[in-house]
Length: 339
Image (cartoon, rainbow, N blue to C red; front, side, top):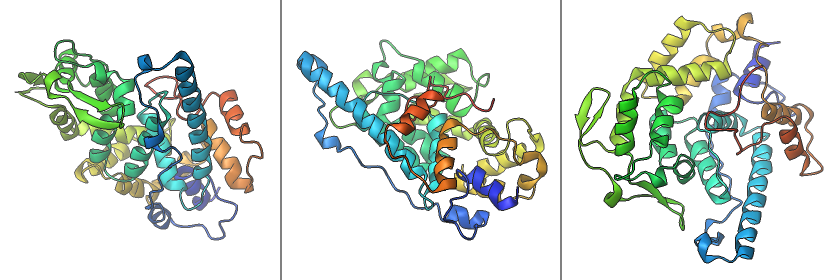
């Protein structure tokens, strides 16, 4: 395997059949700057009435349409992943889609979150984290709509630290309880799909969080987490496992990458350039040793053949058969990787 093919396999989904001259790492990432949001659902046309105000037939029709729209989102994104001019950003969007694993039955919220992730996929994690944390789909999935000062729900606070930033063992149960209090009032308007803050249900009392004490808000908690270099290490390790190797971890290189990531203000594109432009990335120990996920395999088939599915139901059938369906992660931890 030559270096260019290795780069295309990791930075994207393989070498597109129409690619005559393979690009360098810098050129490949430069071509990924365009953000192409998916817009197949018009939020203004979504029936957002309370379910209790609908008839049984109307509720059934609403769920049927939402399921159909989510499947259309699935095939649309799968097709967009195979566009040569977009595949690097789409690969990063797919990575973050798994990192911020989320499920919801509201298709317009699925589309909205996918576009939020795509927008920041190669930008700053400092912006991506609060954007996803305030995303309606995530707030709904992790029960923050029910997080109120008189009855705090710790689900969102726990997963933000355990799965999205610090990693297990780098916070206490007390940190979770106080963070949950800080996130009270974070909600969204079901009729518009917009984030809203509800001051009446927010706990504005003093909170103790990881050695600090004050009247902290949810934004304060996220900022404290980002100030901790452990967050940069956790994200860098996850990127290493996905884009470099699960089996071979060079701790010194990872430590250096994490330090650079932190010092850059969590610049994702800069981190990826550092990885893809390094000489060690093309060493034999990192080449040809990564097991593709089912989605990568399907998109790669389209890349390598230039073909497409005649039956729009086929890609979904394949995803179901291989147990990885876009927008349907098994849990908040995302899909298993590797073997």
